[in-house]
Length: 297
Image (cartoon, rainbow, N blue to C red; front, side):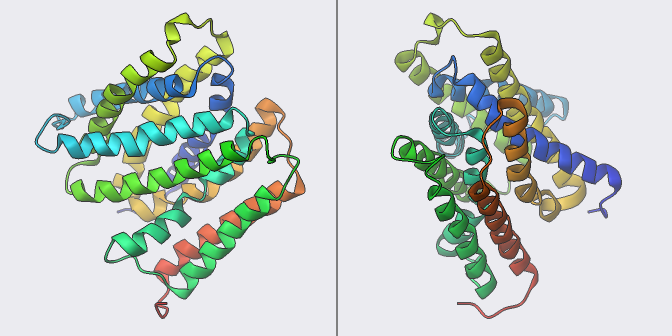
């Protein structure tokens, strides 16, 4: 791995911005499309550039190999369910809140990794980080202006989507020896296969009359935050490693809040800002703990 150069930081910022831009585009897409249809097009359109990359690099795609059940399971848990839950939740929740709620993924990952992996155990630093991070979420839920009895279940759906990402990530460890591009292409293929008939049956998208804004948002969601972002992630992982790439966790919620304000004029209350800072601080402590030797809890 090489030491990060200015271009590497630029690419990291670009990746963070692309992923953060997903939230307000999901909101716009929900104006015309149902959450299952949004999930399908995100996965299907996102698969195209990744599959093309595999073909160019002559990487074998093992979607229908003996490990097909793993790929299908991960595609369902790591793509179909969270993509659906996020789109479902954003129907009634501001996109900037979704960005903060989804930022808890590293915190949830730390908790589940403690119980389901051998090398990721709690430490005092991690425990403090988790408590601070999730205290930010509790504080956010206390903002009755933005989260109330009418949309609290939608907010919880987004939080559940974050947890699904973590579970899918843990399942991916079972096939961790395979190339990233192969795994990503395979789970995208299976995700498309699984969600397509569900979308057709429940939402019948051919009967819709979507607005131009929603169609552009849906196309953007598939091509950029799902497809191009993964290609950019591969590049960063190859050149700079997973630790450098993981810094997107700090930037995504910040960009998500800013973009929601710029494009949708979403309300930013003092509780949103405090919650954002607490979540970022929690993530920082969890990630920093990996570099500090402390006594395990």
